[in-house]
Image 1: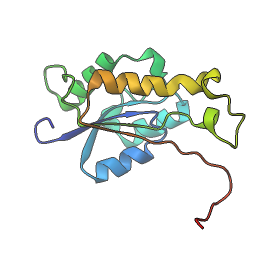
Image 2: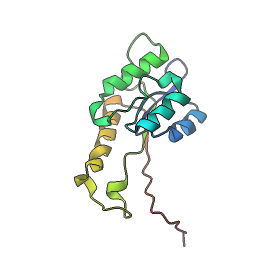
Image 3: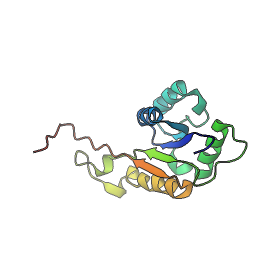
Length: 145
């Protein structure tokens, strides 16, 4: 928590749906990473305070220092956010390489190792909590028996 705000960094942000939920729960998103151009346009339009980070970029090419610096600028701190000061890191790394609905390429699929970048950021940022979402959509509904 910084200046009474619970701080969140979003990875694999998409158009920001998970972030909206976290913001409704009281978190303040200070930096995002998303590589899809249309999704980042949506992020920038809906969250002008994230314009600097809401640009298409790949997580493998973004350092944790970059994320902490961007967050510092959003908050107007005058100093960089230090590891351990972020409350939450969220994200949903691609699930297609592991999905039973896909080819199940696992870590051989280039997307299959991206969860390691999520772990890298968590390790370096040292948030109090993290939420890693894995939406494994099969295209059919399942009923508990």
